[in-house]
Image (cartoon, rainbow, N blue to C red; front, side):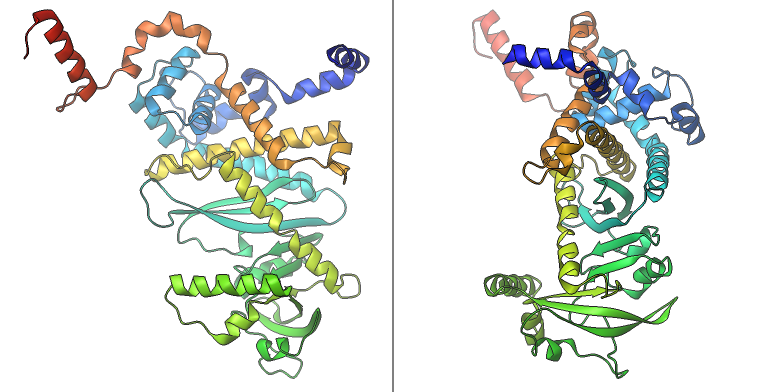
Amino acid sequence: MIAAVVQKQRECPKIEADEQQLFQTWENFQGKLALDLEGTAKETKAFQRKREITSAKDLLRLVLFYATSEWSLCLVGAWALLCGIGYLSDVAVLKRLRNSKVWLGKLVGIILQKRVSALKSLPGVRLRVVDATTLSVPGSEGIDWRMHLSFDLGNLCLDGVEITDKHGGESLARFEAQDNEIWVADGAYPFASGMSPMLQAGAGLIVRINWRNVPVLGPDGQRFEIVPWLKTLTGLSETPIWMNLPQQGWFQFRLIAAPIPPEKAEEARRRTRLRHQRKQQPLNENTLFAAGFVLLLTNLPAETWSGQLILALYRMRWQIELCIKRLKSLLNFDHLRAKDPRVVQTYLLAKLLIAFMIDEMTFHASLLHPDWFNSLDRPVSAYRMTALFHDTLRQIIAGSWAPSLPYFFALMHRYLCDSPRDRPQQLAWIRALIQHISLSGTSP
């Protein structure tokens, strides 16, 4: 088997060389980012004086290692010494993390601008799904941060990101739209202020609504009562409705309703009851009834986009949930390690840079092996590919530091020994006590 693999590699030298582009050393990899690290670091005052750390690329590597290693500040400093970056204390590492927030934000913005420009130039229709996820700092009992995401389904990449505090609400207006796009969103987004700029740009929209959170008018110009209409339905149906939007005035949509299968409808109603019980809110009978339906608003024309197709596209919204799951379970986006807002934002922005790098590696892999990505029988697992590329990046960033440990171990005192404190460490006190008893042969 091994001999056959070796022979195949010899027969395909070009593919082998191309595949090597996926896996680089840090020196080669950071060069492929095509970013002006030195200029942007000085502009944002993340890198001002060459004290210990002598270049912006080393500073970026330090920040990325902090975000991917899950090590303490002391151990990050030890790693920096072993990799030849600098002899930094934990306080020095902390200061550099705090000062890197604006810089990393600028780098993320530059990468997104390049990516969006490239995606806009592609022909055909783009399908974008939007959602947000919440994050909490250690010890928090509520929401502290919210990350808003836009995901391009056709190109398997993030094409819009915004990080806000807990007061930053979900809105379609956070991302720019164009006329060859179809946006898919859940029930947190059907608000006139967010939909209006997107529709003004000529984009298509598929968004889920609640039976009473969107004021709509029927063909007769009166408020359209959704629940009475739902009670007349036996299958997939639709009706024209109108909404008053800030820029368009009264705008016509298609309201599509699809009954959920009975067993799933009962589960949806059970979740609705539990949600109201937890919030100690009274449960409206109409709310319970409407939980058995999927209600969608869309501006896509019925001539080319049937109700069944609209429902199929809405089901694609689940892909951003899976993207968020990968970000949290594989890249540990929700493992915030500090309460300091500057360090939290540095951590999240560094994680986003890693996510963008994984997107680029996935794109490169799709060019090398398009059959993997186009196959319906054995399609690519985005989860496993993300896991593989994330671990690859962690190793590229960390580098090979173990061989340096014997040469620098004498300097590890700064990182491996605790600072003096009023209350002695229990283990150290016990060891001292045992040593005293052993030497004196008497009890203390």
